[in-house]
Amino acid sequence: MHLVVHREIRDDEVLRRQWNDLVQKMAQPEVFYTYEWALAVHRAYRAQMVPLLLLAYEEDSLVGLVALATDSSQRETFFLTSTTADYCDFVCHPQRRTELLDSVLAELRKLDAPMLRLANLPADSVTSHSLKRAARKYGYSVFSRPAYSCAQVVIDSPENREVVKESVQRRMRRYAKAMGKKTPVKFSHCRSPGSISAELPIFAKAHVARFLATGRISNLVCPERRVFLEELARSLSASGWVTLSRLIVGEQVLAWNYGFQFAGSWFWYQPTFDSNFQRYSPGLWLLSKIVEESCENPELSSIDLGLGAEGYKERLATASRETLHVTVTTSTLRCWKERIRYHSAAAIRSIPRLEAWVRAGMHHAAALKTRLQTEGLAGYLKSLFRSCQKLLRDQSEFCFLEWAQEGLSRMQHSAPHSLAIQPVDLDLLATAAMHYVEDPETLAYLLRAADRLRSDETQGFVLVTCEGVPLHFCWATNFEKISATELKYPMTAPSSDCALIVDCWTPVSVRGQGYYREAIAGVGSQLQAAGKSVWIFASATNGTALRGAEEAGFIRKFSLLHKRLLFARKLVESQFSSVTRPAVEVSSAA
Image (cartoon, rainbow, N blue to C red; front, top):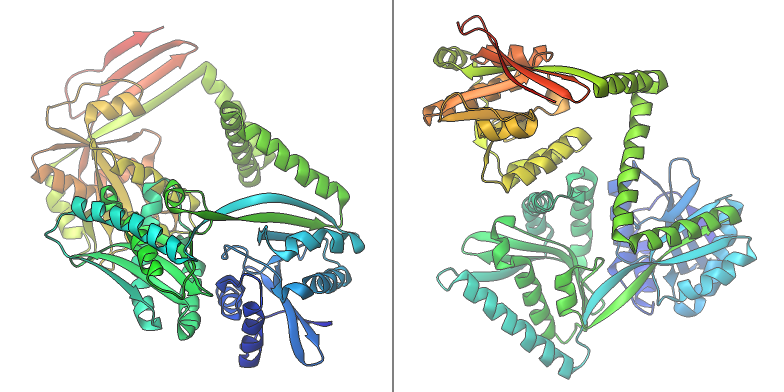
């Protein structure tokens, strides 16, 4: 056996055929091991990693391979497909695995690769049992830890099929009853490249929206991930291995699963559903239908539910498959550090309060590191000194402005016709997340906005282009409530019909173009038309926000000055010159 090293995945029909023949000879073939999967990863992520493809030959016959990759520094080597595949492994006949491992580790030694990380390696693979012995021969230390448990529904006998089928049919009847009998329910599967490509943008937006609704950022915000799914659909559809399944109620798609049918298994790979219909459990309904169809297909023997220990999987699963995360390194010290880190983390997770404390500490440490990188040590020390001063003595002032009718006519002549104000919803938040994926501050804001959507006390607005790209977000809420939470002082609203515009945000890449002014003007006119008295406030030191508000048609009415000395505080309300009432002290407390 001799190895040939490639630094790319070639578009080669002969290699594709030989590669996939080897996959079929494995003890448990998986679609993740195929040539098409590696090629799709290479095409989508070529800017982020460099492939290291090791092909093992005997004469002219390919007898084994492993698709690895390196980072930009070439200090770490890992499975090429590790961030996209639920299972990763060396590809060859099981009886030749030890020989392949020996050759690969010898080659990595020649290449001076100090660290090999093997994520999502199946625990039942021959690789996991043979790796340690082969690694020791070439001076590597190995640390293996549990990674994920992949739930499975096994239907390898007629008895299993009937039991599982009857169970899911009962569940589906409950879903149908909850949805009602008036609307027709359909299940469809897209398998051609054209039909999948047409559905992928809708699926991606629904996935991102669903994650935002649960306080997370979907991997589909990244364009590389969406390109990967498109490439995968294009290359796997010819063999009939990819299936985009949909649950359709009436004319609306409520749930999707981007999955695979390969080597007797239907894979539940990347599912999502429309969050507006969560009460009907559309995702679980779709999964139940997939399980039912699998039970009726004699060519299928299992449904693999993939990585993650979600509760709905456990309710359906009849078996599971474990994966490992293996570190192979030339440094014994590094190997022990990995061991200590893993066991320490496991001990901390066993004590919830300690875990919360440690996570908070890590969050603050990361924030401190970021500040030091951006401000430098001198800048950070100055900020720290100012913060300490504020603990002893602080003074802040907020200006309150009211929307004026004359501002409406002025803005109507200046507002671009290509922009529009729309209510905030999860779809618009998802569009923004995909458009501003390189802006971490905006992503954090979008998570907060998704949380606001669950509240009935705020009304969200977004300024969008004619193409639907969000440019500015803001919210209208109760005047008295927001003053108590954000200003730390409960205020009486100037009138009973007051609405206060708060939490305005323009993504970093589109700031300085007047979108804040356009947005609050449009929101002000809409709220005024609804019979509201519209207000906005900003810090007296934020000249940009105050100037933008005044240009939008808001007029300064009063300011609130907050003074604090140790534990004593004083709040003073000052009227601007347009109001004759003199400044008055609002309160004093100690």
